[in-house]
Length: 147
Image (cartoon, rainbow, N blue to C red; front, side):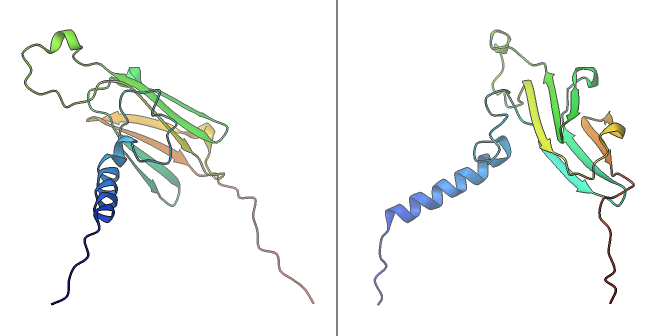
């Protein structure tokens, strides 16, 4: 019979990793803490690279498209907006309130190939889609070495 060594700190580390993983989408364990102090909630996003463009999709149900601010400058794409919700005074009668409300704020670094002048956005069924075209010309080229 092999005795098992009891290591309480290992279990604590495992618990912390699991909690960090659980809260990571909401910014608690994220490396990017730029929005943690300036917003009430952080919408989850998917970012995809296609042949002609980059596509960013953010889940923002209940947000009026007129209340969304998108700014692209100096290689940074900023999303900002507000989702109205029940105030603490109006929560009487609720047995559970889980949907976040208030302001949201996200920032993303854009690649050098992004065409900032032609970014387009649309919102449908609670999903914000931002299309970021790629520049048609590139600054790199292959140089042939002659002998």
